[in-house]
Length: 239
Image (cartoon, rainbow, N blue to C red; front, side):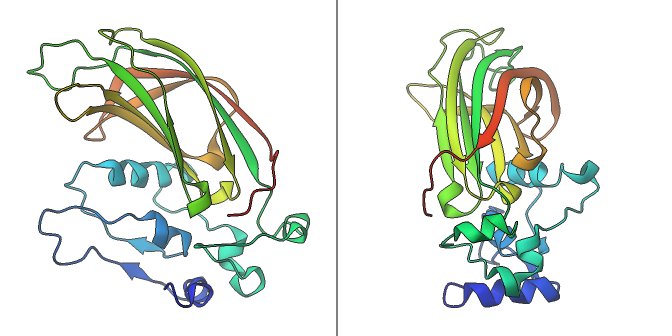
C-alpha cells in the first residue's frame, strides 16, 4: 500500500475490496478504518462487540445517506486515473480545485457552548462528572486534528464552555468530525461519557443541538449545544 498508493486507489475504483481485522486481535480490538476508507475500500470489517472510538467513527461514517449502510465515494476515488489521489501525502495543484477534481478546501469553525444532562461514567459512580469536550477531525493525515475544551468541575447538568476551535480541512468530502465528552479524573484514566460523529459534508451551519450517544452507541438524553461555521480555506497549507 505504501509503495504504490495510487495503484491501490485505482484498484478499489474498479473492484470490490474487503479488509478484515488481523486474526491475532484476540481482544476484539479494531483497526483504524480511516486509512482503508481513504483508499476507497468498500468493506472494512470491524468487531461490533467492541465499543470504542473506532465504532464511533463507523457510526458517523454511515450516518450519511439516511443511515442505509451505503455512502457514495467522492469523485477523486472513482475517477482515480485522472485524480491520481495519494491518501498518504497528496500534493495539491491549484488547478485541481478549479477543475473541481477534489472540491474546495474548507475552514471549519466550531464553538462548543454548553452541554445538558450528561450521565455519570457508570451506574455505580457517585461522583458528579467533571466534563470536557474533545473535537477531532479524521481524514487524510493533514486533516487529522484534535482540540479540547477546559474542564468544568462538578457539573454534569449544564456545563458551559463557550470555546471556539478552527480546523483547516483540505478534503472535506472524506473527513469525519467527532465530538467526544469525557469525565476528567486525576487519579485514573478519563472516562468517555458520550459522543457524536458525522461526516463534515453533512454538517449544517448555525446553532445546533447534538443528541449524544453513549459509549455503547445507544441514544441518550444528553445534548451538546454548538455553533458551526464553514468558510473557504484561508491558507494554502500542503499536506
